[in-house]
Image 1 (cartoon, rainbow, N blue to C red):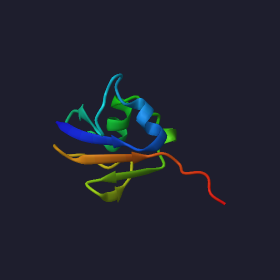
Image 2: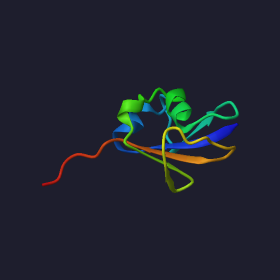
Image 3: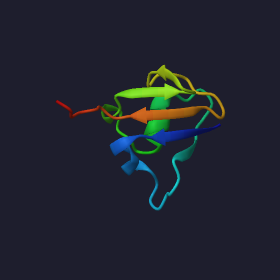
Image 4: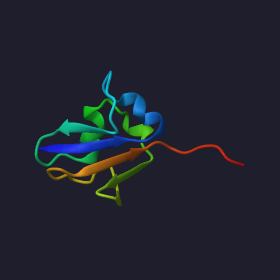
Length: 80
């Protein structure tokens, strides 16, 4: 199955070399999770703080379906 993965902030460095778009397409086996999508792109799970699947807050263990939209966010720091 194919899913679209959007990497936010510093996680963008895990996009494929030369990739210019916002959404990376990942091909995964049926029953794959958001963790599998992150792993397919080389994103370490400990770098992920928040996961959204189809604009709903989810977890790395959320099972994905064909054409799901996955957004991965790193921890946020800064401010005062």
